Length: 361
Image (cartoon, rainbow, N blue to C red; front, side):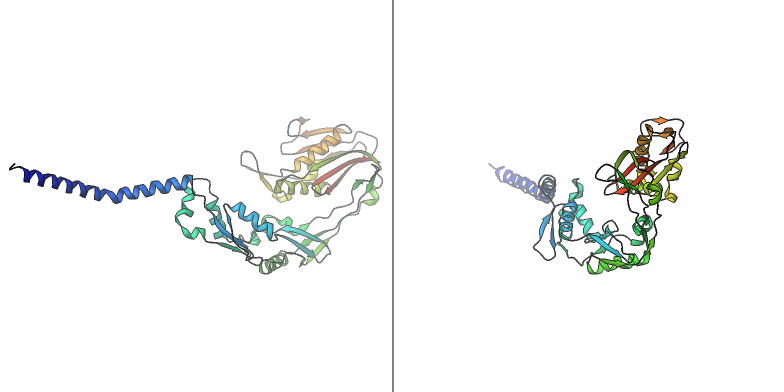
């Protein structure tokens, strides 16, 4: 009984010590529970969104950059129509030139909520500034990259090569001579000034710009002698923009390829070297290497198919097989007219495709 007060005191001291220990651990445990809960929420529950308002209308919630861009470009214009002083006109997607309704900072925020990994979702979760509303207006436009640089990389935007006359089919499967079409050249400074005006005003239609005409060669009299239709091939333009441009470059270099009886001609030499100096663009191959001129070989293949059964194909390098001893390179085609009549491969650039007609006199 004499030990009872001491036992009670000892137990009380142990209780106080244990309580003090748990009190010290409580903040750390609380923090750990908060972090684990936050991690669980971000991984399994949290879907970041940003409020997007277009032209003052009530905001909508978007969950990715692509969703935001679809909503904006569904409502607001992005293709500009330029009226040239030569009387011609053309349209261009101004997004391709770097014009955007979004600032770089807004696009970065949209990229963050578009993130696919868990770690990338933490920024919009903890930083509330990332979730501020984006308000889009028709006359609120920004250049995401210098227009000079874009035009230097894509000079074809400022010019249109002329197209000479070409053979076309009439309604009764006869060939006739199609009209020629003049080209044009636009001064870079004039185009930049007109584009800056679009960015200031948000007006995309009938934008006037000075241009210089480029006269097309008239081959109507010569082509009118080729009245016997042999065969036709149609080559769709590739969906890849660079490959499509390379095919167009090849078209402009060929247009009408004439072969007299017994004449041998290298189509590859007409196309020129597949490099930047010849006007071709680079395309990433399957090994992620830049290869110039991809797209042009599709025209080579189509001409080879037309020529194979009608003329003598001396050398050809194709995707799946070769003929003769072709030179090294992406394209190679040399053909000989082994008939007794003149022939022509007449190319025309139509909507979404290049058409090739083989005809003879």
